[in-house]
Amino acid sequence: MVEQTLTGKRAIVTGGASGIGEACARALAARGAKVTVADLDGAAAEALAAAIGGEAWQVDLSDTVALQDLELEADILVNNAGIQRISPIEDFDPEAFRLILRLMLESPFLLVRAVLPGMYQRGYGRIINISSVHGLRASAYKSAYVSAKHGLEGLSKVTALEGGAHGVTSNCINPGYVKTPLVEKQIADQARVHNLPEAEVVAKIMLTESAIKRLVEPHEVASLACWLAGEDAGMVTGASYTMDGGWSSR
Image: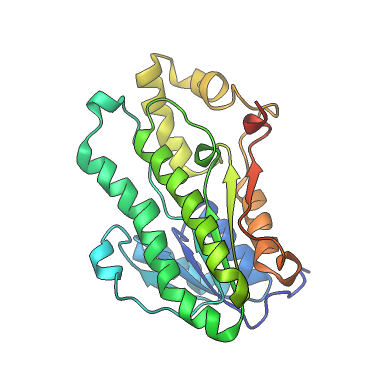
């Protein structure tokens, strides 16, 4: 049985109905947290929330105007929601670029802004930003994603500096390619831009920089998120934890 280290804590996980978000929601709930599953897919959020004894929040996080006056109560915020677009810069749709920045950088800022007052009042808070190895390194054809993740790294560090005196930590988790629907959807796009068969994309593109030649499992990311959410990580803030099989060691 998993130790109930987060009993009494309230958590919000964005993009929480699938992939890394689902794994984080399940793992936090297993440790006793009351989890709000925030996702664009309301039905999937409701189903997962029912399974883990949490709550569902159907929300379009790209609609940042609707979020700017938001007030939220949470002890743990996991900024995970994201999408991907793969294209050379000269062909990159400007609106797709703006969408990714709104969803993956502006909305995390607004959510952090919404939870911080309550965290400061209680003297406890954990901001966990699901970044990427692409928050530390770049890859061709991912200008919007890399820009958003690099921005998220900066936001996380500023949050750490401002929150430290109030018992609030802020950290990034930086996985390589994770076995999720988001990554599976990339395979066809990667094959197209690199002129490769889809069957060769994982080995020749996704894992070429990693010393460990496999995809990251969602539960591995969730396990680190749970540690960062707990009391034992109280002195860990402003950090970026790589989980990339050695990619960023190069």
